[in-house]
Image 1 (cartoon, helix red, strand yellow):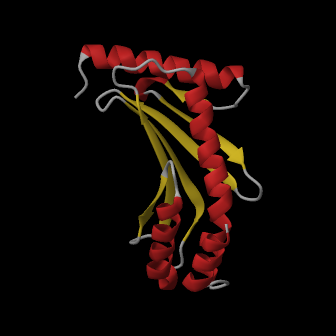
Image 2 (tube, one colour):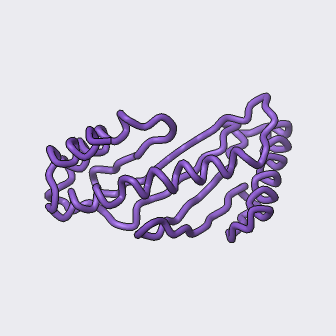
Length: 160
C-alpha cells in the first residue's frame, strides 16, 4: 500500500504525463482515481490500445498494449517461442504472453523513484510501444494463422 508521500509523487507524475500528452495533442481518456490513461493508436496496419498507469506503491510508470488478436490454440506453443525470440532482441520493453488464452501484450516500465520526470519520457514510452508493436504484430498474427512457422519468424528476425 502506498503511503502519503508516494501518493503525492505519483499524482505529480500522473499530472505531468497528462499535461505532456495534451501538449502533443494525443487524445486519451483519464482515470484520475487510479492514475491511469487509455488511448487508441493506429500503427502501420493494426489498431493499438494503450494503457499507461502510474503506480504509487511501486513508484513505476507502466505502459501496456495488448495485441488486437489472440493466438490460435493450436499455435500457442510456437507463438510462445516466437515471443522469446522477439524479446531476446528488444532493448527496451518486452512482450508478455499468456499461453492459456493466447493473449500477447507489449509492456514497458520506468521507475520514478527519487527522480524528476519530464514529458519526453511519456512520448518515448509511447513511441517504443508503437514501433515495437508495428514491427511484430504481423509476425505474431502470421504465426497464429499458420502463414509462417517459427523457423521463418527466426529468419525474419535475423535479417534485420
